[in-house]
Image 1 (tube, rainbow, N blue to C red):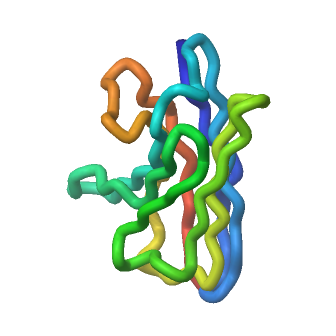
Image 2 (cartoon, rainbow, N blue to C red):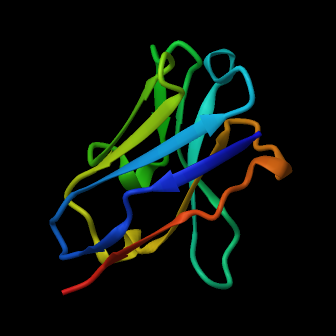
Length: 115
């Protein structure tokens, strides 16, 4: 049972990245899922959530209009399209269930927004 994030990197302000979350070992399609991010010394923050059927999403105010969460239940994948990136988006990004489960925290993927 695991989640693995990928797709992070270094990007200039205003750029875009697409994060990918691959799930294994549980009934991915039955769970609301979410993206989280964390910077050093700060608590992990829920950034975006998506309903089990992909029909509804919610976002923290700071990313509304710039980030888009989607999912592919057949492939057990979730994505976070991040556009118009800002330096304050720099963080390690994680995926987990919307009601996060400790044993599902993966390694995360580093996103760095810098000129």
